[in-house]
Image 1 (cartoon, rainbow, N blue to C red):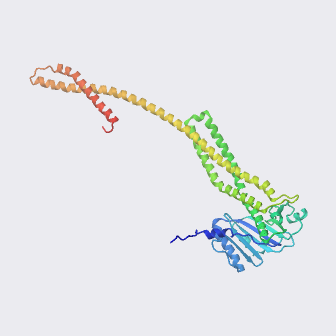
Image 2 (image 1 turned 30 degrees about the vertical axis):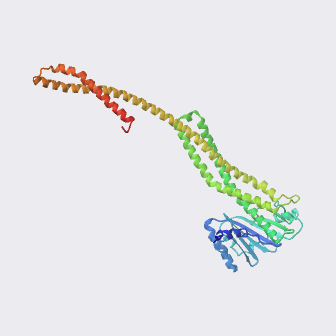
Image 3 (image 1 turned 90 degrees about the horizontal axis):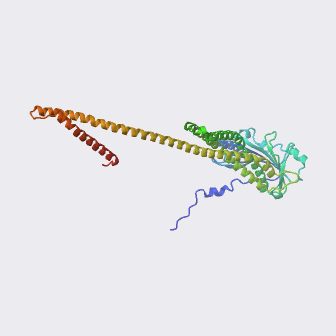
Length: 434
């Protein structure tokens, strides 16, 4: 029987992912509000509970446990919620326009206190207006929409609409987007409004790396000066002293620890800033802007205002990595010199030990000579006693003469015996198995 083809356990989940965050279909006129909050991991459950409470209040089915996106119609208000890696985005839509620009926003249709009770720290808040086709607003009309601030904008979706913004936070705490429907389909209108909100969200999230870069930049400059001081000391004459080398190596070790700590504390933020900046560039490209006479495009604005900040983050990140590499190279150089100095010390110590060994050998040879004389003296004394005993026993012998004759013989025998023992010791050291 042929083997049965088995689906990957995540096949359907992955296939549905590309359809999970579709843009809302919008018809002009429409008001929209967007809020993005940074949410810590421990607050995720409270965030979901907060959405469930809103759904319960309006009698709609709440999101399931573990959901990462949700949309629902709450009477006249439509809500869309999306959870991302470190933030969550809330978008609210209401049909119709207010009499005054950006008055009675979509967020104002929420129950009192619900928006303020969202867990997390607000990083982005924006209002958007999708208005029916009309002539391009004059400079005076744009001043009314954006409180006198300089607006940027362009035709979008290859002329299907026009978008304006000033990328400023107004007195109500919200930035503003004006979108004119020239010939949008409902899907296009929803995508354009969503992209504009996402551009603002990703722009702010990308800029979270800038304060870190400014702080780390000052720290990197101080650490670079310390490394320069250590490098200069290595090249100085006084650095040849072993004690000074050890001190410099300790300073380099402390500096390396500080750099690695700075890297660990900033690389995630810098990496996230790069990723968010790439998303900003992607969302701007998706707008497919066409220039309006006398108006700066969103792409130009971001190139002039956001790109330098991202370059600062990238520069500080690279300086940290370069500093880590330089410290490693300097530490290796200094460690090599310390090792060479230690080798010289070891050689001097071995030479001193060799001299001491030779001196001990000479002393040993002297002691050996004295030992032969002492042993000869004692053995000759014993022989004298023996000769006296033989003479007393009746054998005619001169004890003194016999003792004197025996002394050279005894000395020669003792010397040969000592030499033989010494030779055996040397042979046993050369051959451990002997």
